[in-house]
Image 1 (cartoon, rainbow, N blue to C red):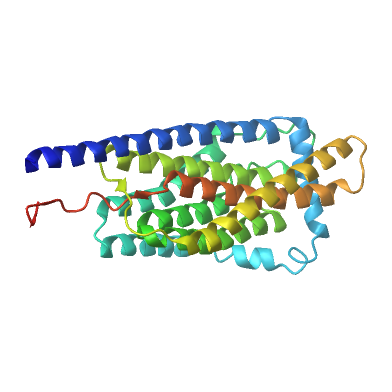
Image 2: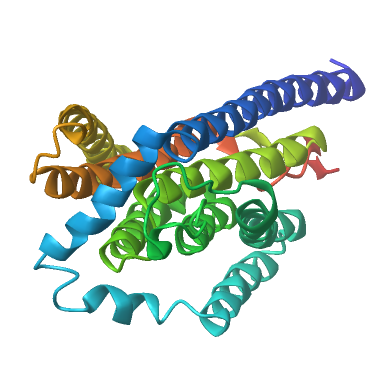
Length: 313
């Protein structure tokens, strides 16, 4: 067979695979943006949503394991400009050492772009109207959460820049850190539950958009080699458990507390607070699983060297 025909066939298959990856990432980007808008509309632009989240902030005073010990504020104080810069430098160092310059740009862009978008949305685009005559301390805008944005974007940036075989391990380790950051922001009273949900969806939209751009330039290929069953056992199954448990439990508690809001039930703050934590943990695991699923069998290291008649082309 003519080597040029063989190379054209390989290149065509690679282009077709990259186009499929790009289309599903673009769909995921659009879906994440729509869900972000829905979360904002439901929890920020309705009186019921605002009352429920105010109740969740009130319920944090009942959490002896986190807020009472002031662990939340102490941990969040470590997330500073310096620590963010250090995280970005680590991502850049990994990518540059691997000589994956486009991936490095995508990973760093995920962190910087997500944080910039979060600040613009929070300060200028998505206001929080006071619909329930809340006290002054509860009327400030905090959607989406900057701290959760940092944690999730660093995790997703690491997923992009590490080798394919280490992607699941990076997700499994970093998710625990990101989940704790989200939980602590509510425990410290810095953010509402919807702020974390919005941050998760925002970062997902940014990382999918940037990865779709990589696919458009032909820098993705189908991953080859052996499978990694331990990754499914140690990463995918726990994330699936956290996602299902958090979302189902959080939804049940959310509906329970919503029905009790008008009755001024004293149990509402506790239920709302627990629901917010469960939903945040479940949503974080769900978007992490979704990104791993979107990148399943997708190697982002770019096309490898082509061989023909024993020569590397």
